[in-house]
Structure formats: C-alpha cells, structure tokens
Length: 336
Image (cartoon, rainbow, N blue to C red; front, side, top):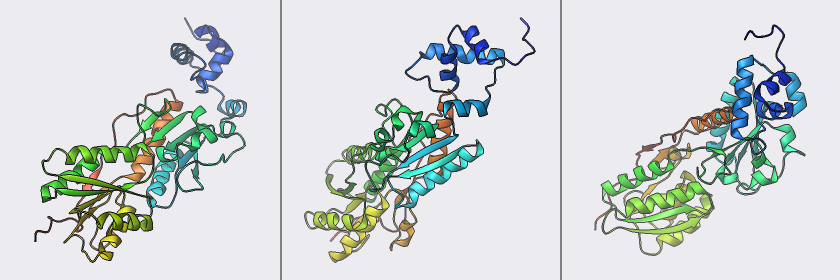
C-alpha cells in the first residue's frame, strides 16, 4: 500500500496501531511506563516506523515539558571522582543536544532537597548514584526515566543500572595482598549504607576466606580523612593486622596518618590499599596501591544508558572493568 504524500500525523499512528492518540503521545514521549503495556508501546513504535512518522520536536517539547535536560544526582563533589562522572556524562549529553544539571546533596551524603518546584516538568530523565538514592523520592526522580549508578541491578526501582566492576577490583586487591604473604587484615570500611560498599565488604571477606589461617576485622569510618584517622587508630591499637584494606583513597590517607601516629611505617610495618585512584593516591608518601576507576567512562556510560531508555532501547550491558595499580604502599609483611 502506497504511503500518502502528506506528512503522517499522530492520529494516523493511533489508527494504524489501534490505540488512542493519548497512548501514542505517551509512547513516543517515553512516558508510557506503567501506563500502557510493553506490547502496546512496541505496536505504536512499529506503526510510527512503518508510516515514517516524525514528531514535531519543538511542539512536543512545549506540549510534554521536554527540555532536553537531565539531572545528575550525586552524593557530593568533595572528591574528583564525581566531578569525573559529571564530565563524562556531560560530554555524551552535549553530543546529543542535552544539557546536564548537576545536583549534589547539600549534606554531602544522604537525602537531597528538591531543586525544582516540579522536577517532572523540568527534566527528561535522571542519572543517580546509589549513594544519593534517598534524594530520588524527594525530587520525584523515581517517576522519571532513570539510570542508577553503582546500584544493585536487582533492586534499583526497576531502573537501568550502570556499574563499575567493584567486586573484581576488591578481588584484585585481596589477591595482591595474599600473594605478598599477608594473612591478617583490617577492612577500613565506609560508614555509608550503600550497595557498592556492601559489595566491597562481601567480596573482601569471601576472597580472604579462601586462604587458611587468615583473619579479617572491620572498622567503620565516615568518608573523611579525620574520621578515618580516628577509626584506624583505634582499630590498630588492638590486635595488629599486617594490611589495611580501605574502601576509598580518602580513608587510606587517614590510615596512613593513624599508622604514623602509632610510630609505625607504611609499608614496612603495615601495608595499606585504597580504591578510586584519586590524585591523592600519588600525593601520599609512599604512593598508594589502589584500584583505578574510570569516572569519566562511568559518566559516559550512564548518559548513554539514559539515552537508550529514552529511545526505548536496551542499554549496553556489562560492568566497566577496573584495574589494580600497585605502588609503594604494599609489601610483604614484616617478620621479626
């Protein structure tokens, strides 16, 4: 059947798909989730493709509140990691005509306040770190197209997820220390209720537990150097480990200070590892053995995943690889 020479309309799409114009608007505006079935949404998209229908983007933006604006919700900008996430996301967004609004929690970590009178009217979608997930309900972000970073794929509000392979990073750290001969470990853990930190604790315990004669204690600390100093100093005053495995590089910096306050040396008396590979890692003396996380690639993948969700496609699968960077803070355990 020959196509009409006139431009197809949303009414034509509705008739071809056997649905209402309202349903067509929902599907082609990517606001159909929870309002029409996946089968209906696919039928509408097929009808639009068959008819060669192209919506008037300017009119649709006005009518449906589309602003080509994405909200990136992060817990804080106190380290360059989340700045790198923003840089990567903004790069991909700009390539597709989108802008990024960056929204860190005012408290640093935890619930955030609503930055808009009506987030849904101002945004096309949300990319959120699991560490700032409490902000989503407040800003109604869980009702928008959503991509979660560093989040449990099985429990992220039904959203798409993008993850670094943190579990493998922790395994690389543990294997490195075990190969050096370490058997007594302290885990300096971030005192934050978050899936990504749960993964670190679980993987470390599992890997260390595969070797007979190992011990593992845990000390929790807020993600700050001074908080880490206090927690590590208290923990190191008890049974002394030969290696301290830290959840991030800031905690590792605090561990360094605690070791030195006790009159000990890194790595002669105690090896220390981090996780992030911040600039701080090479400012420490000795330089820190840590896991390199590609923050900019993380942000890029997050934005690409959101674009896929907006277009009704499946986001790219697979975790982002990470790499252990061995420096001077680790060595075989001291033997008397």
